[in-house]
Length: 163
Image 1 (spheres, rainbow, N blue to C red):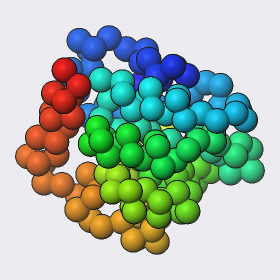
Image 2 (cartoon, rainbow, N blue to C red; image 1 turned 90 degrees about the vertical axis):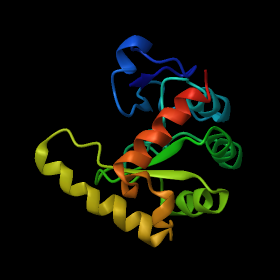
Image 3 (cartoon, rainbow, N blue to C red; image 1 turned 120 degrees about the horizontal axis):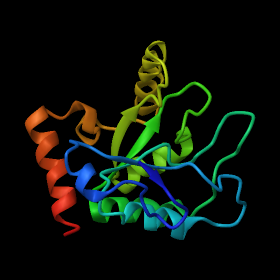
């Protein structure tokens, strides 16, 4: 789901409740240079998402990504028990390794993703996994490795805790 710069989603909650997982991603105002911590906190507090997708919003050699106080962002993700995505898309590789190590130390849950727009791009999952390995993210912190029943339980609990 697209998140506005104020953290609001562009889909109805009633439609989202039919989904198992919802990633919230910023897709506008991505070249701002001022601190965007409040934007990230608002996005994480969106009651309809469990995962903050391609969080840094960077694109290699085109866009550095948004700046934030990542200690506050990761602390909020931990407080809400929400996951932060590693986007393995070759041009993104978002979050960068230094921030992934910081996220690991903060205890953030991680979601491995690809941002695939075509079937052949699903192979980017290997880049997400490689980044997680390089950052030494423990498998039990990666939601992709959860047994299905545990994943569903976690996803439901994240939404319940917002109610």
